[in-house]
Length: 278
Image (cartoon, rainbow, N blue to C red; front, side, top):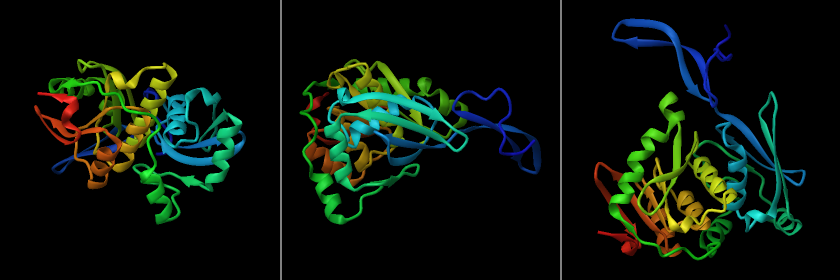
């Protein structure tokens, strides 16, 4: 069998590929589940805008969340239709958006090519980065308050909800929890930004008031993750790993509570601790 061909029985979002397991001097031939990663083209009103590498799951959620996170549209209602077309070369997502949003998109002069774990792909100057970083957020953040224990409940529940990660060990997850910390929505992807986009898109499609809960991510809290969370309207972002200094500054300016190292019964709060009750 060609190594590029999947074995039968691989769950959606994975491929079963031939592999050799080695322990000491012993080697066993077999196969392993590997996370799928495909190029996903986002096309707006017939014009190609971005190609991202992503897991081929929950693509309608991804398209809407990406579109909101990049401020291509300001409201989910400005996305009229989403169609996913799978081809041998990858996946194309055709979005039909409002004419005003399309005019703004054409004015950005951005043609992005994304990579797994990418940063501000397509930003072509330091001036543009500064403008992008300092833009006011899309909407005021909810002032709901949460018990610190809710963060740990949500993070602990993430383990059982990461089905793709359990199969492959190669993907990130983003989840949304209610005030008590119960996980109500989880999305996974090979890219941490994509997982958060998928979560935002899923909540937007269901018209959820995201400020009544908080976001949990199984990754570090980079600048882009904080920016996406704030733009989506989350008041609190809890990460299993560390933030960057730029992320902390962004969270402080955006009014977002940022918690890192949420694991093992401890956490560190880097901005706006008033949302967390002792």
